[in-house]
Length: 454
Image 1 (cartoon, rainbow, N blue to C red):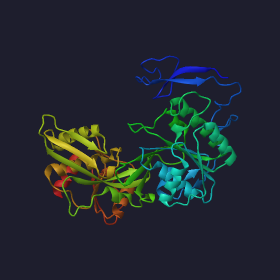
Image 2 (spheres, helix red, strand yellow):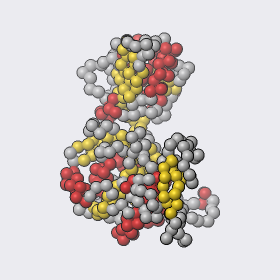
Image 3 (tube, helix red, strand yellow):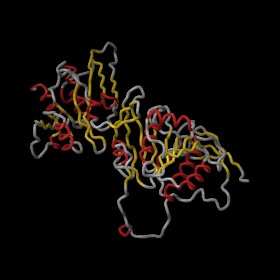
Image 4 (cartoon, helix red, strand yellow):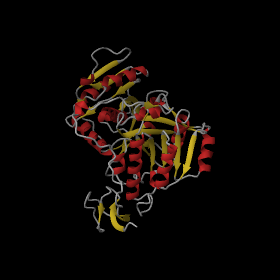
């Protein structure tokens, strides 16, 4: 019988310590050490076998490579986030808030894949009856889907070895436990051990495994960060559970583009891909309104049109409010300082609120120019010209800096009927774009001046 051992494991980084202390010595986080009981490894145990197959030393240019074949999931938007489809032997981790649609989407995917592949759904949270009821509600062809309600890792691996499925869903990794450890399911040690065993099985057997991961109240995946390092792709569900739209973003992908975005609509028949996501993020105004500016942002390989709305109002408190929804709040304060210093537009006595329509989160600095022009429009109570799109990064010196994929952004805007664009001069197209007037600017004051002339 293996001798149990008590250690203290950090919930943030997964580092182990022989005794408890207030601060983790590995990542310097406070009050994150939790007691855990582990067993000493048995002689001859292969628990710590490397995930990658070993081999002799060879030159890198002599390694034979081949394009990984893809298996389509039946959802064009999900395939886009994955980089074209599922890869044999890949491990994909999907996280998101409770009730946002993770299990629904994966059941739809397995029902489609089960027509030509052997698939298995391992449920640790729901009973077989609950999953069957969901399948009937979604009206999916769930006959080919094999179902296993189990949380014991050794039993799951034995079932996988016997069934030999092509695709497996583990719902969820935080409910699975291994008998080799004495800690409870969901603990740092259990999540790390079970994910490593599943990944090892996927790499040796060629089975594609989709893991469902819980998230904390801060929105990060629960468990050790090593979980995200082990898997091949990490996908996050975004969006409000009270809204009918869901966004899936790729945070990590060894087989495709990072930050790729998929847009879905939640219907009574499950999640359906949205073919024209730009329509979700553009408000339908009868006529131009002050404070609204259309931005062409880049999500992975997809140009996306998003409406940026700004509201500037007289402050009734000594400290004016600065609030940004869907954008970085600190960057808003920085941009207001640049607007005052280089364009002469002061907002020090005004409350400033900025919102990205549709609940999308914009992290790239290409939104700077659109945010500033929306603020100027609201402050002056003057609408921007109709069918105008804007993109560009604004520096502290007041310069408008170029952004990536400028030509693709302009072509997407022209395709959707926009006729005017204010962009960085370095992104100006070499040739004319049919139906579009391009205003290329080098400085912020030039962009603000272009609005006065409009």
